[in-house]
Image 1 (tube, helix red, strand yellow):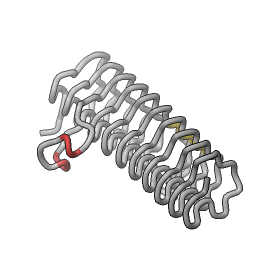
Image 2: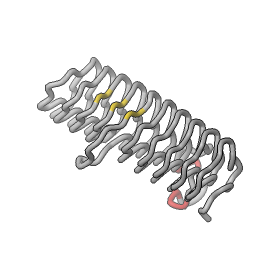
Image 3: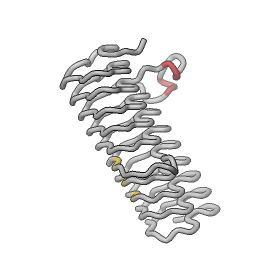
Length: 212
């Protein structure tokens, strides 16, 4: 553990085997960290939460984390990084937030196997259930609760999409309404939504979307 310049500097908490590897990994850490976690440049730097096992892989992952990152979560550059000014608590995973910038600046609980694909759940501000928000930019800037198995699409990275990734309409991107379980399971489904989406609805491409 603690392999890299200033890794684990000023740490006074438990760090498991094989953790905190790279420049400034776990620097100024103030929370318990499990094994094989916090691998990458500045990973878990200034962490004050709980980081479990096999979590926080790649640069800046879980930096300034304030919550509980459960097993096998937050894999990707900037995955689950947080603003140093945020005051609050959240729980992520297990097996959640996989991809670059996934769950970055998230402030609410995210369930099992949720938020996979670049920028999914970026700036999320509402609870997300299990197996939800899977796909490139799914649930980015979400502000209302999303149920289990909702907001799914197939593309996971910008390389999967033939075009400008800035124009990619992820499922439930910028959602502003309650989405029940098993809904919005297609590209551009419920993008920009502002109403309540019932269980098992809006499951075809572009359905219930306000994005053009």
